[in-house]
Image (cartoon, rainbow, N blue to C red):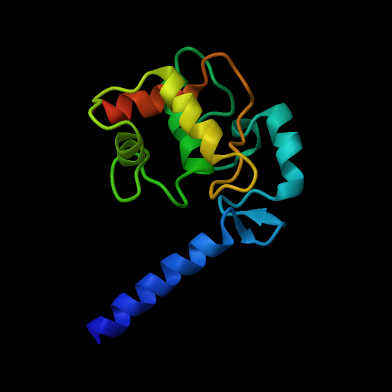
Length: 145
């Protein structure tokens, strides 16, 4: 029985990687956002279009929590902040020997893995100089949550 469970778990993981970044081929990304909605979300913001977040906009006061909400919408279907398949362990593997990651490293990581043809869907966040999700990742990766 345990061999069957292990085989099914490996099969499911392989199946998920084959279809990435889509959950429904060329229609819906694995984070539940339809491909056709991405341009609108990039223009108006992912928080403004989500019913299940505490914030609908980013302010200086809610920047960390709003960043966590963006992460939960965009990345949490596949990643955790600190756990199995976490962004912190992925960054640690890419940048060994570092205990802190600067803004440039995080931005490069996100840009690289959300490019077309990669395994992650595009980040549905409006471009900004200091995106809220970056601060959330930096805090989680240094043990401050």
